[in-house]
Length: 261
Length: 252
Image 1 (spheres, each protein chain N blue to C red):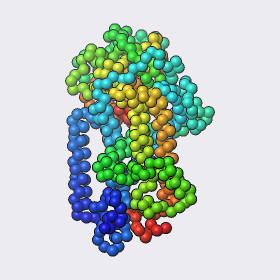
Image 2 (cartoon, rainbow over the protein chains, first blue to last red; image 1 turned 30 degrees about the vertical axis):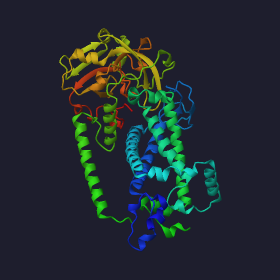
Image 3 (tube, each protein chain N blue to C red; image 1 turned 180 degrees about the horizontal axis):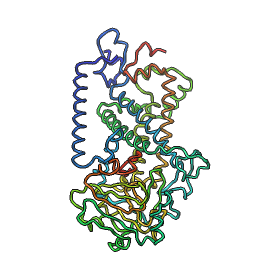
Image 4 (cartoon, chains in turn brown, yellow; image 1 turned 120 degrees about the vertical axis):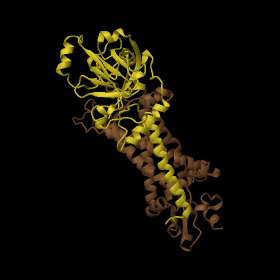
């Protein structure tokens, strides 16, 4: 009875809900352990990837399309910042310190963390029904109207539906699906398409994107999209009750008393 | 707070034990099959080892990407090089006639080869890309003799695990494992785009290694040493680049 009142007909972590004391009765399991641990490990790996990725980019802040590109080639665009190499014409009389050594090592180690964590999360998501129940929007929400309505609600700054205290709304679901199943895989693909050894074995990884430099350019843009997602994600967490959301992602639980805002 | 139940403790403990045992086994297997790179220690060691091991398992014996002649870059970028030292200037003044490639270490027949000797071993050409770790790249045709032919001539002994190659430039050296050394694309390069290899691009002799990033394609090679113990060289990390934090395995 309690179970169904908390999770409705879609109880997915039913066994994890403590059913003992009066005090515990007000708590709802919001995020299971695997989701919490993989969430924070991904966050740490992502920060390491962004910082080291930026360091790598400043050694050549020019971008190209196709297979090849260098300082003798016309770039698609260049970021107007000084470079960490004096061979790059940037218009600045200043060369930034070269930090590529540790940056590259950190970039690939963090990439491994992200990939391994992603695999664990993926296996959990499939086997536990987390993807099906928590991420894929309900069939009735597969309409433009569902998206329009939820956006309008955000704009009115209306309080979330009770259901949203336990699971995600259609916009959240879509955003998470795009990040998990589109952006991260594209980052891995474009990253591998820059590896001379990997593309030796699988030339199509680079060829399908138009070449190595195209892969690098896409890698750069999608990293900005992921950063944009992070920004919106943090703003949404902050505006919908920072302490409560953080507690849910750290301890796993939300407290009912807090939910009434 | 999350109550810690007995079941959780048992599951968590079992998972931790399995994880540690799995890591230990993986490490032992990686060591046994030579999948730990010379710079596989330290904070970034696990990442380096995973990359090297996976690349070796996944991309074994696959040739470097080659490109059609139409894709050869019109304006390849030579990159900056240190000003030539006196030894190099002397050899350049003599048209590199006295340039020698010394081959020693764990080989049956140590030797010293002139550029003419190298050419006599047979020339190959390949149209491959130079990809710099900074991000830029270009495609050129490279002409030279495969390293594997030189190693065959010298009679590399079976215990050999790495080939160390050294530049006439002070302190510039690197190394590769036997798989890369035996790759037909690993080329002792003397020509580029139908001419002699220009000094800016590493002439008179550059080791081209198209399946790894540009910094492993060392310029001005004059010494090759076969070895069964990479620790004896420099700081034991397999090259001067790893001493500055750059990966020994630069296939990514």
